[in-house]
Length: 274
Ligand code: B12
Ligand code: SF4
Ligand code: SF4
Image (cartoon, rainbow, N blue to C red; front, side):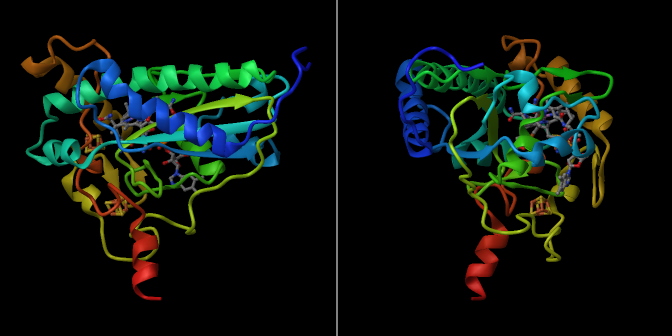
């Protein structure tokens, strides 16, 4: 069912600009330097591709129309972290304090950016369906019924890496958010290569496999329980996380200073050999 407000045009470039401004304004709002590079945003029409979600993600994964019956487009955005934060988190086997803080502040930023984009679309007469940044997952299965990574893959914002994270043109270190809307935004992909992970593209790498302190990452698999235990141990054991929320579950060694941390290494390689 359509909303009753008159529809005014809005395009993906408007949404990208709004997202960039929103993220750029966040450090001033916090009165801090902030952790972020400019965000990326991709969209796709709600078509048959989204019917494969229960096959490629959790078997009870939702369809965009489960969030919003008249959903016409899916919007996925990625807020990349600054290099100095990622470099700081590379040291040793434990996450640094700033990585925990950035996790908390970025989840909040994602939730508010989703709401902001939803409100701007709403003002133009388009309803939206929103979902939270994280901690919306089943702790037994360790899967969510709405996986931003899989949505990001389907709207061609990025590609899965061997470390099981999404690699975008701005890399993999950062966080994802997504929403659905009645607006017809069309297809606005951002990834230009079939793979974005060197190993998946048949090149040498596997650095994320080597660096994981609990050996959770395999060439073709992921021991999600080992990773989850590590994240919980970090939260429970690190004094400098004591004032952060109980849900501060972080590590991120597999995303720190990797060839895919800040860009698409397959695109870089293809450009260099052209
Ligand atoms: C549950 C969860 C976890 C679990 C399980 C992790 C996992 N790999 O999914 C635990 C607690 C272990 C975890 C850990 C971490 N998480 Co987490 N987590 C989530 C959550 C809530 C849901 C993820 C989900 O449902 N996965 C579904 C399963 C099926 O995915 P999967 O295990 O990766 O397996 C599939 C893919 O790898 C896929 N795949 C692999 N190759 C290919 C190729 C193709 C073509 C296709 C179609 C699929 C495919 O196949 C697998 C089976 O389908 C999301 C937030 C959200 N709601 O989306 C954040 C999220 C995935 N986490 C995130 C992050 C950053 C982390 C950590 C780095 C912790 C930290 N912040 O320090 C680690 C990284 C672990 C890792 N190497 O993946 C980010 C990832 C950002 C990104 N660039 O992708 C997310 C998206 C949060 C966010 N809002 O940004 N997380
Ligand atoms: S570190 Fe290498 S193997 Fe791991 S995801 Fe990145 S490019 Fe792929
Ligand atoms: S987040 Fe840490 S424990 Fe989990 S897979 Fe990456 S390196 Fe391993």
